[in-house]
Image (cartoon, rainbow, N blue to C red; front, side, top):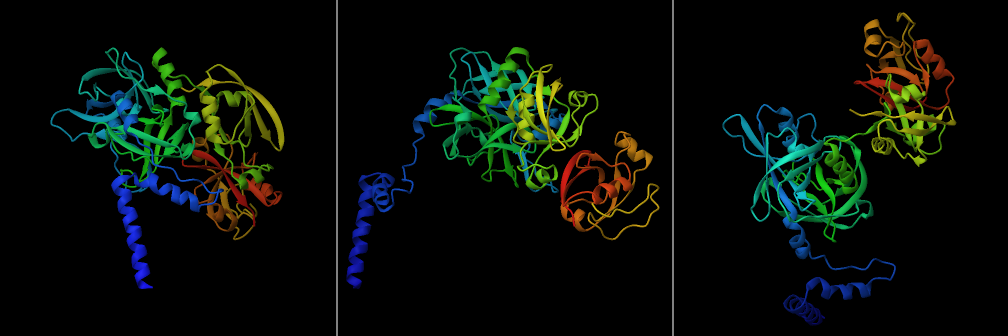
Amino acid sequence: MNRRKILASAVTAAFVVATFAGHDFVSTLIPTVAAETSAAQPRLVGLPDFTELVSATGPAVVNISATHLKSTSRRERSSRPEREDNSPESFRHYGMPAPDREGPMQRSGGSGFIISADGLILTNAHVVDDAEELNVKLSDKREFKAKVIGVDEVTDVALIKIEGSKLPVLKVGDSAALKVGEWVIAIGSPFGFDNTVSAGVVSAKMRSLPNGGYVPFIQTDVAINPGNSGGPLLNLKGEVVGINSQIYSQSGGYMGLSFAIPMDVAMEVQTQLAQGGKVQRGRLGVSVQSLDQDLARSFGMTTPQGALVSQVQDDMPAAKAGIKAGDVIVKVDGDTIEDSASLSRLIAGKKPGETVAVSVLRDGKSMQVPVALGSMDGGLVAASDKGDGEAAKSGRLGAVVRPLDEQSRRELGGDGRGVLVMEVQGAAARAGIRPGDVILAVNSAPVATPADLKRLIAGAGGQIALLVHRDDTEIFVPIKLG
């Protein structure tokens, strides 16, 4: 028996050695693996060869060196991948800072790519913003001085220009056609190492990031590090489908989560920058948040779809059109709004002055509001109106509140709304309400006094949404009442 096992092992070893010696290891083993799997299972395929792709596209990728004043603190903040002690996890831009030098100037770097034979280059805004001087180096070691055509900080896209002719260019691809799981590569200058190639797959699409609400980011697992900023994300056809822009990191370096600006967004910005040096966007003048299932139930909706208006800015288009806090925007010009990010992107894509048809749900009823867009340049509550009542220790909401003083009312706009949360327990505590919050409304009904809050909670069902002012922001918080 032992002799048979030894013989079998020897045969297997001989097969493996022969495979390494005379054949491609992966392609030799694939038929064997495929024969043992059922027809319903995915068939294994060989890994792609990127050599021809890199050879064809690499010459159009450039290294950008920016010289700026040391006193330009915004440049230092945006380019350095430093970690803040109170923020161990964060999304970061990743321009590459050079070591500090003597004198008033310092340098930072990033990447970019040529999109026209006469020298137009796309990169990130944070790579070139506030630069006193820009230097562009090609893969063939030629160097050029560059000028900034335009910068759009909202999308983090910049267009710069070098003087040249018959320069190598990248073909722009269709980022909307990308599929999750598709192979992509990045070329750039991480840590100053020019024309570095890294590969991976598309991990997800349409990602909304905390500091990039107007961009539906492409998420990949391509290794990206400081200095890759502004470099291209390429598909296997050699087409640029994104601009590498951010990473999610605890250390400032690559951790497997990289994000790129889709080229359909970048090219829209590029067109406006080339024409006028700036980007014009429509503006509603509202603060919105996405719905979850609890918030949807609070507003009588069966599905959490749409953008919930938490604040309407005074003298802005939405306010003039009659949109109110508590409205849920579900469509704009017939286009369905999935969440707050999709509303922001859709409105930003409109022109200032354009009139759009905004469909909202209000108190369970559907209505349509025309808006002329501007430009983007619970339960038992105790305390009397005087604040001298006895505090309740229990109730459906579980919050103790008092009226706002005059200074607080002025800080909140002086519209007479709001009660200050003093203590929380029960349902309010479970939902995340905390002392110092100001409760402005229950669903869409305004709260001006503790009595208002008590009355509204008493008449509510099992699910409500409180409009809360916290840290200069107004948000709806879903609460399941006790």
